[in-house]
Image (cartoon, rainbow, N blue to C red; front, side):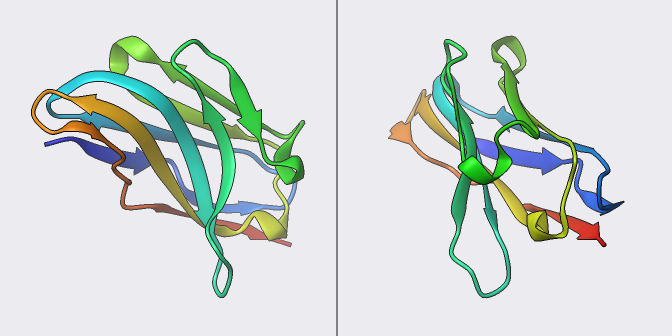
Length: 120
């Protein structure tokens, strides 16, 4: 069964940096789109950035120029480099992927989330 496991969250001062990782494992035939979302308390989940298998990227306006998404297709892993962090970036960050699995067709699993807290 396909699972996504995130790592790399934590507490950082405003202006600092963090790098998130998300590894997909289990019964994968191919991964198409991979993305990072975030959800702050009392707010809806929002797209932060996404990347296709070919490397095309899309970013939320609020993170353009500060965050960079990348992926290693050989490792089924997506990364989010976050620079110049702001208190408003504080949220749970979740990984999502569009996966063609070996047994279940195309699915869209979510990771468990990793907390990012930016102190002012």
